[in-house]
Image 1 (cartoon, rainbow, N blue to C red):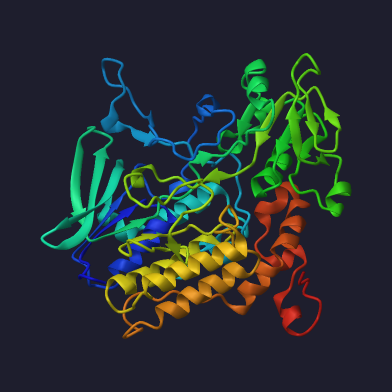
Image 2: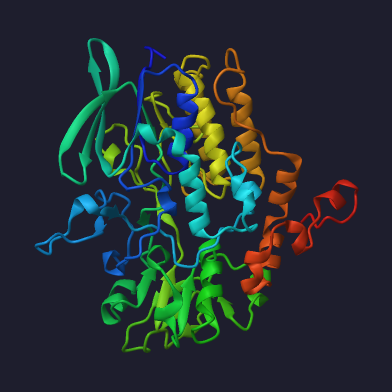
Length: 487
């Protein structure tokens, strides 16, 4: 680094931000670490927002460059009947729904240095995960400015020293202030700006049938789908879960539209769902009522509700004044090294960008590297080497949504790479050490798809399951060379 880093700002107190704060604090090197969190508590995306007005959704929604979110307020009214903000908390819409259960076994999901999540069922309810995160973060609470929204971050230079000017707003008082920092961690997540593709006819269809189209971000419970014909677009984890929840009350089968229909998908339908290819067109009412046409020419009519499970854009409006920009198409973060460091501003780092990962542990590994680089115990390669890494990643995966995607077991290898990198630091025993994945962890990750399928067959009994062995998977059998059900 060109200068010594002493003051650090962290944007977000979710799992990534808490990892960053813990690993940075453990260096005992930095003078101050300030964590800015717009919510009233830890947890990030795991905070539940009961009010999720889908009227906030543009259809289509293809613009990642959205303004900062405005909160709704949950709390008490004062004597005049107005909201008393001092006794209230800001609420931002998250993808958490009423009956969400984690799709990761607790021993994979947990932070590497806190196994308390394992006291609960194998797949924990959202409330349990949130409490786990709050407990895990308790030791860095004194570093956090809650109910504080970062408005803008821009590079600055003072007395020949480069740094960052951070503008933030106290959401209770509406007071805006600024402070300067030597380095910034962006740990605000990427589940804020939903993506709804511009399929032919979708805008007119939405105007004709207002409220019929929604994104999974705004789903809360199946009540509104009772006795409705439902179509889900997207076969992601959320799409699969919503089929299970909604099918208990909706008309059957639920139509599931999948972008890439491989041969086994063509027959992989059940009593609850029928799989269809990509939607080509939303048909006008003059052609057919509440209907869509698929790419194979088939038409489905009479659809009451459509849920898009099509993911989110990367969007960081508080970084919009920085050039070159980090967000262009919203499909990835630009000018980035190893999914963490800004190539042109190495005192700015992102945590939690990779997708299809085991997130808590991945953030631990990234945080360990960032902490050791910024304390001066570990070095970054040259700018040209970092650019070459990004160019090679684009050549291998493209510059779109696949750029940050880590395929099955790649997330294991990536995390272990981060741990190895951190241990190259001078005095590697100093500070907080991230832990590599164990052989059992890797075996479980390999079998995760089959484990989830076995779990789905248990229905409401899933909260009684404490181990993968109860689902018919045995790591010990696999070690002995027997069939431990490795896919």
